[in-house]
Image (cartoon, rainbow, N blue to C red; front, side, top):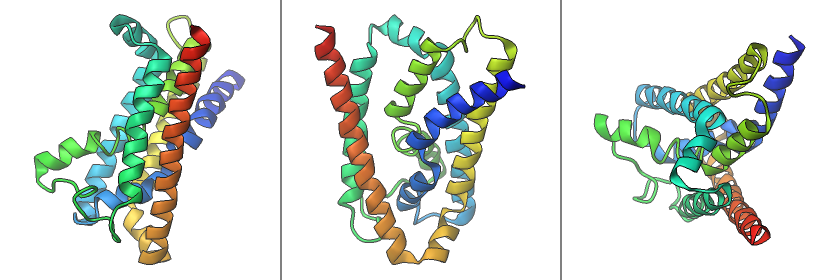
Length: 215
């Protein structure tokens, strides 16, 4: 059990500050104000499921995929950081209520399915920053083929816990707005959008620094 707890805390503690389900919920709400609560619940489930797959895929086979395509982690950081920074900038400059064309998503069934992955999962929830951190965990910790089963179980439980938090926070994002009020929700959304922009810039800076250091 100690091995399970150790791997759980390592993965969960590394991912929670980056994914930040409560903060991401406000940005999720900014994109989904025009859909019903039932549609939002279904969308939240899809985002949580995609996030679970992305975390586990990055943890176990992410480094292999990057090697296959000849992409380094610094390059992933720079490219992913740009995507995150652009998403944060758009949300930061969205109109009050965040329902202008920069944040509003397609409300048709197919449009919602598409939006569940991009942009709601990638890059707003489990974006390049999450992928880079998870790949680093996978390459530096024994979670892959040579991992003991208990360590593997702990990592899976951590990914499941993160996904469950994403689902709960996203599904009830409109209820959170009802408790806090529209004005406070908009203010928090812009605060987290600014943080998202800063995270993107930080990821870019780290990627560039790693590239320069590797020369």
